[in-house]
Length: 93
Image (tube, rainbow, N blue to C red):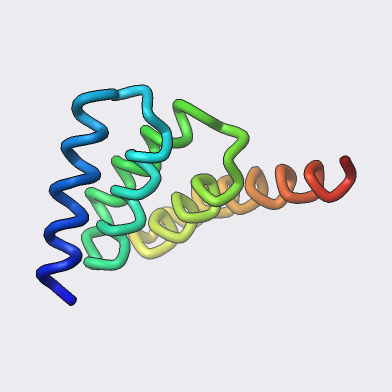
């Protein structure tokens, strides 16, 4: 499993660096870093993903989880709020 995560990090990191505006690459990189318990790197990747697409609820939520683990509770709550607001908007459409 660790070898697979390492491979995914390499692939997603390469994709994100080749196309810095590619939301999916930053989001995937954040997910892999989160699975590795590398919260600082996960936070950086999710912040990039959110900067590209602030309406992506999963990016907001995962950034909130990472911030919470880093002890940044107020910031985490704001990300959870933004994520939930987006989900509610989708349900209402």
